[in-house]
Length: 340
Ligand code: PHE
Image (cartoon, rainbow, N blue to C red; front, side, top):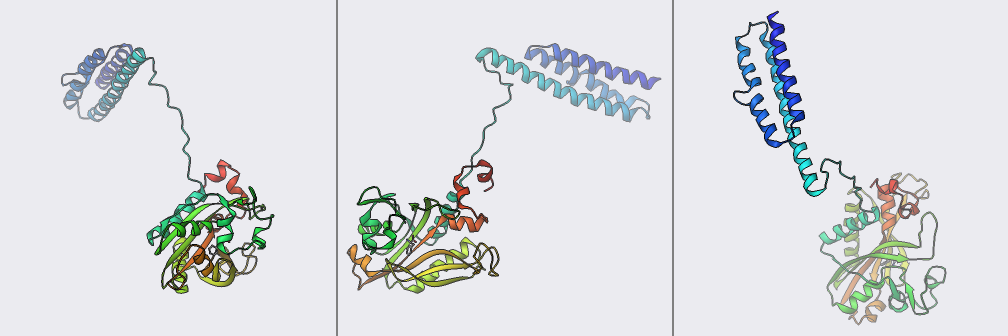
């Protein structure tokens, strides 16, 4: 019987406090309610103090209920204070601060940009500088200076977008090598990332794609340096266990030339669709800079030697991310792009 009366007491305090806080519309009203109920001599505080005088069997329940009431009232007072403040701001400024915020959508870095940055980071840490050149390029730089004569198949109308007879959309980043050497004396160690264009379109080719060019020139640069740098690059880009091979090849602006293959990342060399059953994947072209290119920029070929390389960013991205259709990168499907 006595237990019930005690319960009714705290419930009464609770209900009264709640209804009073809900009808108060001024900050100082709420503040005095806080004192009245939760202050040192407040009703809830007094009640809690008196719990110790209750019969032992009533103490736990009464104490717990009073503590819960205290907590709920504290929150109710704070909430009401915020509401009053909010409506005050609304009145003063016409802005309803209680409205939920508008959701903003966060973009993400395009996978091709991510890979380009990764490649640039790896070479920057090895001491390479970054160079750039124009996408609309003179035939002179895109071909002529790179030892690609007028009748070379790479100039065929099928591959090259001609703007005029002497101007093209660059078909590779190699013209940046020439432009850079014209302005700088050795030693040179640069990479040059950028867009390139070829009249080609299927599941592994888009008319615009990205390359990263590399060029190192100095005294006594050898093919061993080329192998060392490119091996270090592949090991950092893929993983240190990745096997690679240098396969003899041909480019008019390098001699000797080599393409670099890595062991197929999909089948680990067993042979699959991605590596066309060869077990190897081509990742870049490279070679020792052809003396004719040095002559075109006025370098002393008896003193300087160097190597150059060029890689397709989309190709490396496809291998890193396991994507087999290059066109996906350019369809701008947010669901695809969000995954990287
Ligand atoms: N420019 C060549 C290509 O687009 C790649 C390359 C660059 C090869 C530098 C050798 C040296 O295929």
